[in-house]
Length: 577
Image: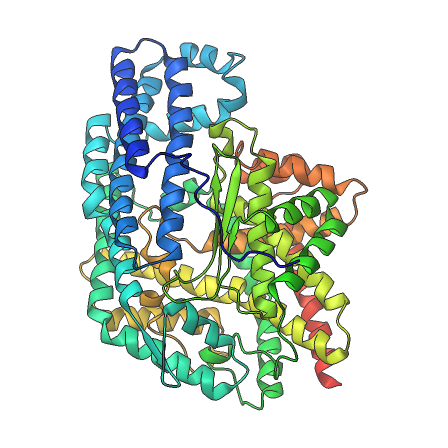
């Protein structure tokens, strides 16, 4: 059966225009504002804001999809600007409600939390009140939200616009950024080198512009932190991920102890490729020519089969999604680079975006994004506030899905050579999670410290990036990517800083759960219960409740890292043959 590689977005607005939905939400927010200012019924205000937020996210994600499917769509750009403004209005309304919550005395607030209707969202409501106490007065926070529309959130839109107008030359062809990124996994080293040089040259030409974008994003963020009296740049990212500094440090410390093992894999891969050591352009290189391309239909069948073995419910869900036009995987120009999955909470559907180029890596990416969609599916009936799943645990289901399919591909390989090929693809992603992400974390930490002192010049950004990469990779590469700060979208986000360590957290968290789950008889039920709780507690509590583990200690993180070590040992043995 031929599967569609184009998604259906027409179902979301149900005959209304985006502008009509925007205007309706604006008017409803204005009414809610009046009710909050009059302090009539706080419970009603909480539920009204929750409901309107669901509709706002539905619209916002619809527009995200429009922009992703065609970065040259000027109407979508206009709508993005409109929805960003609406987002500021939402944030201001939320600030008013937070102010009301903080004004309640402790006894009154406790009574509110005990209300039968509030109980399912008590964690989220308590969190809002606690965090509001650490911010500025409502009026000042509202000013920040208003100024942020153009002064803050406009910078990522600028990056998107610049990227959308860039072309990259390769073999006399003009490619988009997403298309040339796929060439970094080309089996021909000359092609990979040419692709890397094209990327490097194009970003080097616009380096001053990208430096302006990154500096102004960071400058605005630091100014907010200073106003709030926040001295640690990691305060907000850690709070956003509901985790303690001790958990983050325990994770990085555990990874540090396993770096030499990762370097042994990289050295072995270099030997197999006939190189003295890997360069940046070799990190995604396959071991030899790909024997056959994997059609989208074959990839779908493989994923469904192995999802079924892991969890019949997840398998049935994936089958429905793949047949329901939820995915835009077509390889074409003008698409946004990378991949994502977005949740439409009102429609209780998801949409997956990627560029499928018939490779094994693309198959694993598809599985990863289907995992995100399954997470959304599992939590679809929860109240909106309880669906507020943060990035680190949002990576749990996606990484678990990816691990499940990867393990199956390794086991079902038809030859030792195929097994080596798949193991390499798997381990190259381990290197990305444990080394590349760490380099991003180091860069961002040092960049923010430098930015506190003033504008950071492009050349300095290059130096910071290369130094971070050398440290994270243990000097294992021959050549690095100093302009990665300009080319990586995750550095250009206004909604959150440090869009990096949550990936590593999710990866190792999933590996640890995978290991623990292999010893449980009814893992499917335990796993679903874990996913349902991901928006309702801090991660340390989540891990303790469902698996009796302490994330602030290295033991749990070591569990996942030992799995990777074992895979590296298998790779090294196969390489000898």
